Image (tube, one colour):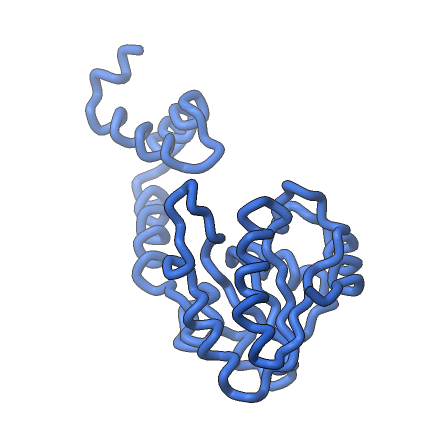
Length: 200
């Protein structure tokens, strides 16, 4: 473990360890890989991280990640603006888009209500969603939160807020495994889940 006498290397390993799914051994391997890069490649890598941080932000309509004021999905006139699919994470949008079956819009919550983890309704983008529903265009909101305790609680909380507005609220069919994340579901499973959604 002599390499840990090298402070910059130790700090680099610590940063990689902060990544989800990266343990200590993987962090060390990644750190050494970065060190083996030519200087110009290492600079490209660090520049890409900084550029992503500086240029990527939330779409002002759906809260999905974008480098523009309005994301490409919200600005697409061919999309059905009367249906909004509510998801927890931007990666879930990517999963749905892979199916090529869904031609409406999304709303990204950036989390789920979880009192145990200190995540309250005001910490996710519920207010922005309700603002979108005040325009008399939306007729259906699909709850596509994950099939976890937090995802279910979030879906039920939102349904209680939305139903009094006279908007149909549906839930994905349970082709999605309980306890699973949408980003790991295959295209066929997601397609069937959309088709089999039910009102809540």
